[in-house]
Image (tube, rainbow, N blue to C red; front, top):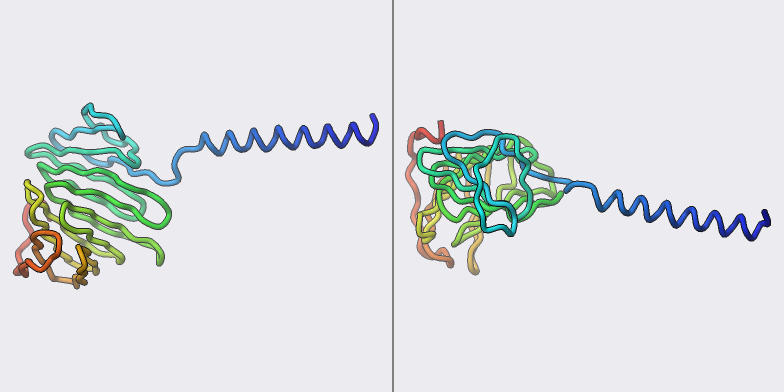
Length: 202
């Protein structure tokens, strides 16, 4: 075989190798996914971009666009990296975004308890509701409640620290503090008095 033929053969082999590796990379699953770690009662699941609902099952992986509904007297727990997100009854959640920097979860109504065990310096966990975005940047325990009509959101920080963002306004929520926000500009809010943990917190 001549040197020219050898060179062409090597280039062809290199091209095939690149295409093969590219195909393997494209076939890999998402780098981050949530896992449905616990179910109690009736919990439904709707895959991304699908209108149908099916019964959720434990250990199912969930990714961007997937949706969960916990019915009356029902609960569920999502495990996402270093955080556990617990859904209370009558709770509607959509997984908006997962990457190495941010995790976004949309809470349209209902209650979430979030336990953050670990979080990187450049990472954050964001809970989006109809009238605000709540960013959790520290290890801690948090609770978010959204009214059934989506008009108000209550945010409590048991320990840790979070930031609330709305239209042209932002607030830092310190440990042992809680606020209830009405509307989207956050000029209408109330301070929540300390309350003992309820059954969902426990």
